[in-house]
Length: 542
Image (cartoon, rainbow, N blue to C red; front, side, top):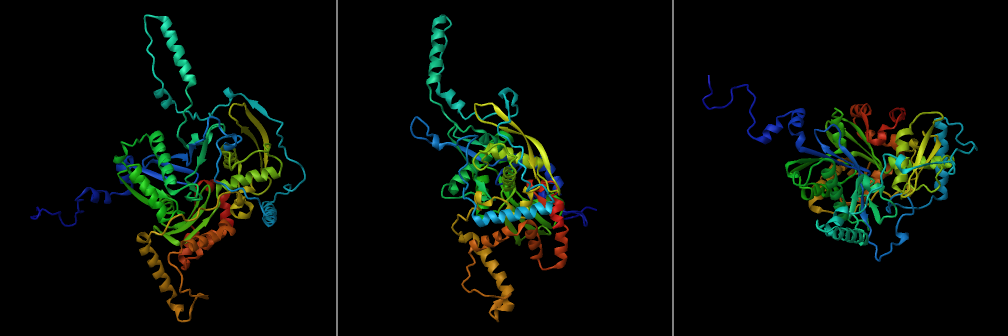
């Protein structure tokens, strides 16, 4: 019998009344199948940015960097303004030397690590096999898989050159036209590309007037006196626009049809997220966007609803506990080191063992040097006990010269990854620190969150307020709910404790024992450093 009012029969599922209700009723797999081709996922990081369609098996990973043309006055370039060798240099790093106490601390840590790994011959006086005179020259035609970046703006050059018509009646006039064309082409000054993004930016010869910039550093926007917030956002737009256009074939005219999922690192605060969201919507012209934290995305992506998520990136390690799909901010920790520091520690160990043949290797200012060490770390570094050696070929490239190939024996490749548990082993003082907050307080954006946090603290402190103390500490009536710098200092207190202690402290900060047990059984290591062989067993042992 039909319903007189035209409504659905009793017990039947209600039908969606709009497109929005329809999408809400879909399962995630159904939504991905229907809309995956219209959703772009963007996951920015300090070293790389990953962008791709939601329906793709894997995103496109591109170095998160950009090279800008240097503005040099005069016709002659000042050689002092350019790097001495290799590819384009970076100027965002410190060069402070180790203090005497720091040297002693590092040596003591090295002895402890060597003892734990049971490397008996590490401190032997026998010199290594690094010999800079023993190398093979590889001609350019045999050095396949590598090309220096062409920095000239060929498109602008062609447009600025007039075209000559060749008269068919006179060969002499045609020859004269060819001569004039060639002469004008040679006399025309070089025009350089204004900026170069991604992998190409890391392969620019040192003789070319370009400098490299990274818009993110140590998990934060790389704001400084030399690098303003507007410049950072402009560079982020240029890099992402390049990837979308050149790698994903999604031009600016097509983007209004797409929505974006911005997977933001847990190290960013809401002001930095707001800037990235503005780039996505205002500059890249996406139709809509949604923001999700990396820890939440990693939890759901691995098929769990709870866990302690440790994101092990190139320049920073962050962690946070997730309970039933909700990130617990009080469990967050930040360790201001990552895979890049392990890479430079690998160089330090080889130089100490005298196995490294190149005395002028500079991974801080020469991206090619760093890429060489990075590949060696990814391929050969591991966390296993005993003597760990491997024989490798090291290629040294300089523009205009044959490639030099050295065959060396890398020694003790299991020592550098131990810096994750003993940070004093890593050369942290050479790298730029975590960028300080660059913003002025946006009261409109922070009032609700800050006073909510203050209210939660007030509820917690009610029991001890009568005695004037909370957990043994006196109450400070002048505390500022907007003191973000104190929060940053608290997050950075974990640096001396190492990875294992930071994870334990994060989980134990939750009071309930049942939740602690569940999280200890669901520790998830994500990120590039998490792929280190033997790391999972090392974390479990600690």
